[in-house]
Amino acid sequence: MMASFMIGEELARLGLTGAQTRLLREKDGVLVTRVQAGQAHYVLKCFRNEAYRREIGWYRALEKLRVPTPRLVAATEASLLLEDVSFGGPLRLGMEADMRDPAVGALLARWYRCLHEAGRGWLQSHPEPVYSEADDFTRETLALLEKRFALGDLPAWRLLSERFEELSALLSARCDTLTYNDFYYTNLMVARDGSSALMFDYNLLGRGCAASDLRNVTSSLSPEAAEAFLAAYGEVPPLDVALDDVTSPVMTLCAACRRETFPAWGVEALALLRDGLDGRLVRLDACLS
Image 1 (cartoon, one colour):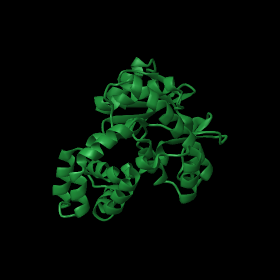
Image 2 (cartoon, rainbow, N blue to C red):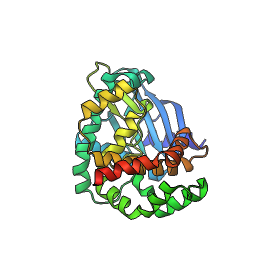
Image 3 (tube, rainbow, N blue to C red):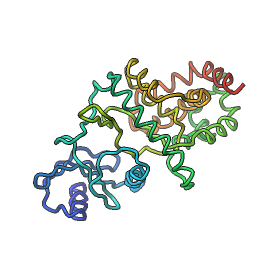
């Protein structure tokens, strides 16, 4: 009842009273609805959660930065009205098969490179705080994870704790661009003519290190598609990669702990902290020496 009321209110603000609607998804206070008004088809995204309304601002910012996005038809303070690519147009929704396609991997690299290059300048001219996964890398987080998962007896974990200030300073210096942070094919659009690809759904977009975005993408692609992605993206500073390798499992595990059901990727992050942190710290030290 509350969902239909908000959808109706937002459609009225957008001048689409009487349009046909079908709720596609309701999660974390975000309503995604398919809308038909005459012959026109849209997707309406309504945000009950005010924190998630940051996505509305990101659409406007990315447009100014000339980073490709789905076509934004209109917006209110609490909703986005987007073109529904399921009914034709130059773009199509991503498919699982795209994760194995080297051509799509190379196209994705172009979009991520565009985001990262534009994002550095944007952050320099917008000093106000924005969402960052690195905000979870705190002494409080380390203490909570240590207690919950009994990590305190691991030598590598103790070393991580001892070097917190150093690692935190490195993160602050290296998190210097806008990062997407939420790669999966369900958030992907590909040009029907094979000329481009882009990501949508910008709720987790924020300040970060480019290397973390690249890991986020390549960990979900096939080896061939990941190789094509990295070749098309270009060089990444080895220090950035090594720092991300050390710190990202902490932030990933912290995010997993906030889920109602502990996800598989949280189990993987925990395994890395227990069994793979030593080698990652060695590689980081090699980059710092």
